[in-house]
Image (cartoon, rainbow, N blue to C red):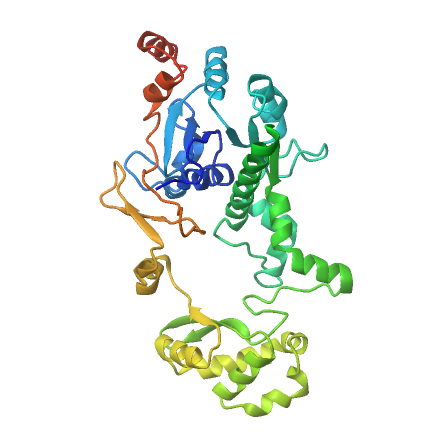
Length: 394
């Protein structure tokens, strides 16, 4: 089967999630992705460790389908290896501050001197404008500065999402930008720089709240899990756990009112539209909570499904792994890794294509697992590779 990005080579200098997951998505569709690791292993490899040698959970997820080359790019010999690899590369992925890129010779201007049609996909925390390009940050900083953390939690306790939504969303944007740059290069023969930032991604995710505040100046305060713009939309305790219910729009509200046997709510002036239902959401949540408390999770969800009201269980990670519907959907590719007692679930790409689908065919690489192989492809002989090893460059 032909793969969409077959023949495209990517040098992945990414760390943590935004850069590496972008490169992984390209690899899923057939690109040859070479992860450039630090000698001994880069720092993101060991976050949330799950293997005997310390590889982390996110590392296993965002570095599938890649090969690993260890390289000290601070040394002249390491820079020369990068120059040789650039000769056959189409894309360089890196997520680091612009100043760091320039210091390492990975800025777009420096790369173009070696490969004129190269595409650089560069994400950072705050972008490349003068006031912020030197600053560093992680997913949570983007969440916090966008207004999203303020809107979560309770008035005296802001709360960020514990999953890195900004990192993964930035990676998705970068992958899209990279494919668009490759597509444009077919016509122009020229490369370009694809740029993204965690903050800009977070602002996009929070855009509704930002536009509302600019237009109306209402200074919304956090309401926990309860939506301030519709209702009842909240997380509710049932007899054996928790569920989420999201009633948005007039037709859903009518069905919900009939479900809980309160049809009079349909004409109640407090609840005539989403705005007023959001303003009076605390009362609606109390009614829904009373309906839920005597029912099991399955009973409540079955009734909500029959009424065609969006709802779902609040799962622990273990429950998500064991859910029959999730497993049957092909959501996971179970893979072994050295130092793991069994296989772990690598989550499949979020989008697929009907004729040329993505695939996960290779586990994440061990440190420098493919160093000799990649250097040989770049034209290094065995004696040269041994010399680089002796110097500690690889």
